[in-house]
Length: 287
Image 1 (cartoon, helix red, strand yellow):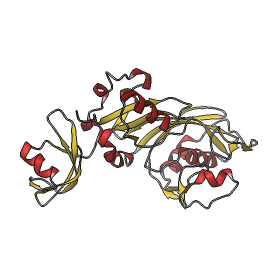
Image 2 (tube, one colour):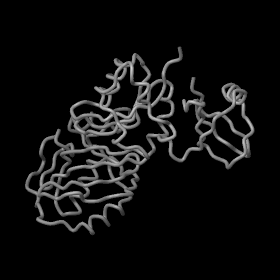
Image 3 (cartoon, helix red, strand yellow):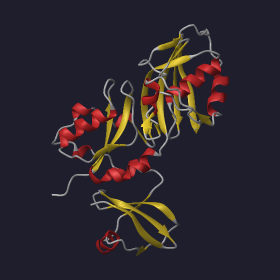
Image 4 (cartoon, helix red, strand yellow):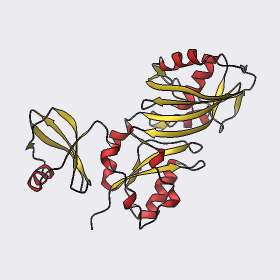
């Protein structure tokens, strides 16, 4: 029997790491090759897309998708980690009674770059930045390009400001919260964070880990057509599939693209291909 392969949408609870979820799925399914498409901090909750089996090779496509978060920023106090896990470095920041939401909206949507937190998993000389931070070494982390396509204040109950945002890959919400606090003229840190959506999928379609069993997890695999936005879908005939799996190209009319998702009649993922000048060639073959 071939190893099952597919994607599961998991609603990660607070208090466990993203790898804890992977470890739980390995124990549940017996599949060793399991990954995910973007780490959530242990205290964060929300959507984690987990890849089981050979589809782990496709994670990079989903990692590039924009992500939607809701976050609560506590104004007036700052920690060395940007969240509740760190030590306070300031607790005397001003806390306004009201917010200029129009001003915040303009500033946040106009943001083009943002520096990663000192306490982050970003690799520096092969080591995560938090290794240096824990030893008291301050790194000069260059700002990274970001794109904020959505921002809105959901609630302001001083000192807590809850907001929603849709951001590009590589945007650290802890850094965004500190930037927002700076726009308000104070300091702040993130006290709650929930990932609401990745690309075209959201939490309404996610499973709690304890809802899955060895008997039902394959039925819970998410339809790949709903995951891979911006892809062309192609169901190769048997002879075409044989050629593609042997690394050979096949004729196929259509526009040039490097995003063709290959599926069988049951919508099981077969791989990724690209088309150039009416000729489709395999990029990733899944078996």
